[in-house]
Length: 248
Ligand SMILES: C[S@@+](CC[C@H](N)C(=O)[O-])C[C@H]1O[C@@H](n2cnc3c(N)ncnc32)[C@H](O)[C@@H]1O
Image 1: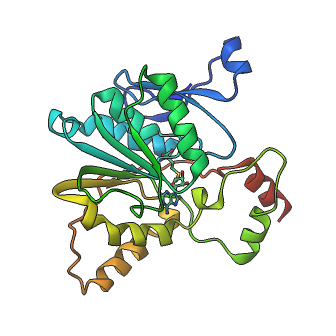
Image 2: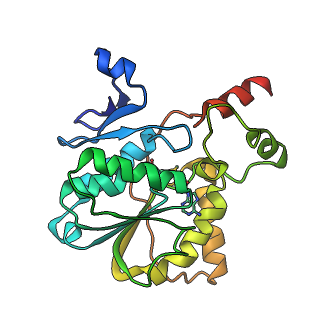
């Protein structure tokens, strides 16, 4: 199991039971305050990172009856983690998207593992592009943590591996996707709603926000603030990428 201990320090706990050892593709996440999810893993889908667990913990702590009784949109849902956590907390109007079809398949499997019946609307979409025209009260996005990669890294990352690999879009282009997300957001966010974004400093938070402000002559349509700051270890999200770093 990986997750948070209740006073909030991000950590990894490895259980030594045989079941955990042999089912490497099943993992449990603890978000604190008694909330756990069981997820399945496949190399083509983003495995929940410490940053994702942190974002889940924030959603958990900040959830109020008003939030849970209204609509929730999870952009770039990956394994479905935050959509499913919100469902655990009692939210019932949940939509979740990912650009990667395999993620949506996996997220549906994960809903099936954690709940008797499916209720989340999972759909493949590049950000908001294939969403029905509506506004959401809460929108969450844990975007890719790394910037647009160099052409030479793209070439290496695109080399096929035997076991399947994480799409480049799941790990990189965080700067580009954040800028597009901010532009599309006002149309899908309720005027009284809130968007919660987990931004990795490697993406260049200041640059993304400066670009956003400049584009709108320093009068952006949305008010924003930094809520929390966490220092987390640097990780390579896929074994393929990690192996490349050793070679180069
Ligand atoms: C860092 S992962 C986060 C996954 C999951 N939300 C979590 O916290 O574990 C980023 C996710 O965003 C998805 N993504 C990247 N670009 C996207 C886009 N343009 N539209 C929708 N999803 C996108 C990726 O496929 C990946 O699943």
